[in-house]
Length: 111
View 1 (tube, helix red, strand yellow):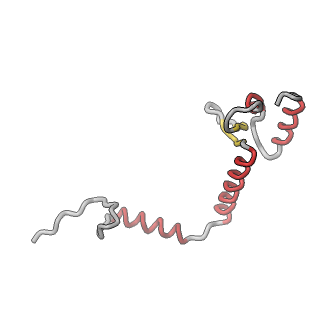
View 2 (tube, helix red, strand yellow):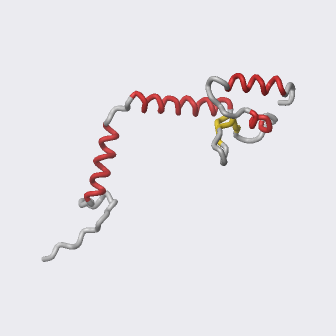
View 3 (cartoon, helix red, strand yellow):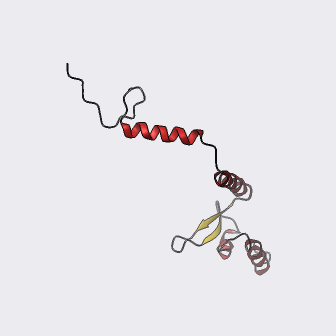
C-alpha cells in the first residue's frame, strides 16, 4: 500500500509529521526560550519597561518625523501643551532638560 503524500509544510500541532523547515524553526524558538538573556538584551528590556512606565506616567512619548526621522516629544490626546511640543526636538539625554527649560521660559503661562 502506498503511503499518502506528506504536505510540504504543516503547522497543525495535532499532526505528528512536520516539514524539516518547521522542525528547525521550532528548535530555534526552543533554544531562544531556554537561553539566558545577554546583558545588552536585559538592558534593552529594562529600558523598554522603564520607558513605557514613564510614558504612561506623564502622557508623553518620543515620536519621529516622517520625513527626516528626527525625534520630538508627543502626547496622547490634545492639551494646551500639544502645540508647543514640536519645539522640543533632537531629543538626547544631555539636552532634553535644557530644551524643556527654554520652552517654559519662552512661553510663560501659555500651558
